[in-house]
Amino acid sequence: MEALNVKKTQYRVSDFVSWQKAGALVLSPSFQRRPVWGTGAKSFFIDSIVRGLPIPIIILRERRTDLATLEPTREIVDGQQRIRTVLSYIDSSLLGDFQASRDAFTVQSNHNKELADKTFEELPREVRQQILDYEFSVHILPAGIDDREVLQIFARLNATGYKLTSQELRNAEFFGKFKTSMYQLASEQLYRWRDWRVFTEYNIARMEEVELTSEFALLMLRGRIVGKTQSVLHGIYEKKDKEYAEQAEVERRFRIVMDSIDDNLGSELRSLPFRRKTLFYSLFAFTYDLRFGIDSSLSKKIRPKPISSQTVGAIKIAGDRIQQKEAPDNVLEAVARRTTHHGSRQTVVKYLHSVTRNGQAGD
Image (cartoon, rainbow, N blue to C red; front, side, top):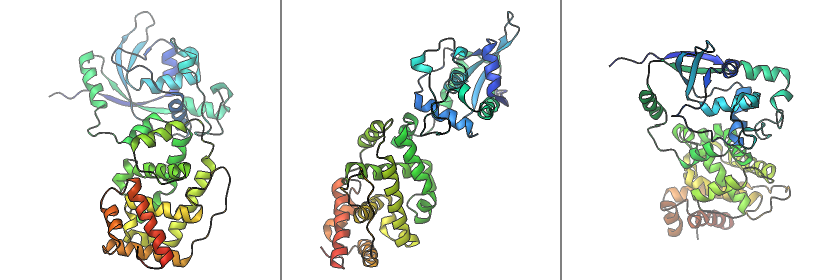
């Protein structure tokens, strides 16, 4: 089988601008998807360019030189939404089918406060230059390849080989304040997730630590322990996408609780059953309850209560008893069964409170 001759190169944003001005770029060939990115996705993309972060490869197909303009034509096989986004941001007149309701946007403050709400012309000169000079990695298919082959390539590009997780789907759908906050908080704790062995590298690659961080935020926002359901998590991402008034307080409390766990248990956590991500939720909820109260309001900043050394000792005792299967039957059943169910989570949290009060792992 003869290998396809694909040229691999880099083109600057300014190259795409020039081609579009010259009518030498086909943005929407028949096999491409229609533009569907929301303003959040577009804002996130421009911020990525400004920061110089890598983005997926753009795939073009060469076409015959236009006899009227004497310009070679290129059409986008994969990357239409990326190119449309940057062109519409730089100059809306570059898009012949520009619609303000669909295509107009600015960078959001949760992505980049310095650029927030500014048009391209309002950006500092050096930032505009950064955007225009940004280089896309580009693969160019030869002109001789026909539409059928392009469709087959396009299908391969979108066949991942595995089903996306619910959190990965949320990552692709939301780009607002709540999503940005959850990813920031989860990323800050990366060294702890690894040190405590709560998540493997594969778990982190599949965004499981972000999902758990989202559950902690939900705990604070609801003021009670809730079970893990994807519909509930999706709902909070949607509800808090544009307006997230509690953000600062949720972030502050999250960091305090994570610091408390690290200060009191540190590397010992890796030998306790609470390092399991399902049980770690109960440890976080218990610690949060001790420091702030699960049902406390987020409308005001409150001082966290201290955690005594006796309480830390009780957590370790409870962990050992769970590990040795010497905890009460209802606790062992909760641990063995659905620890993402709200009832099971409450059982473990109540057990930790019981051990703390009694100084022993009894009922």
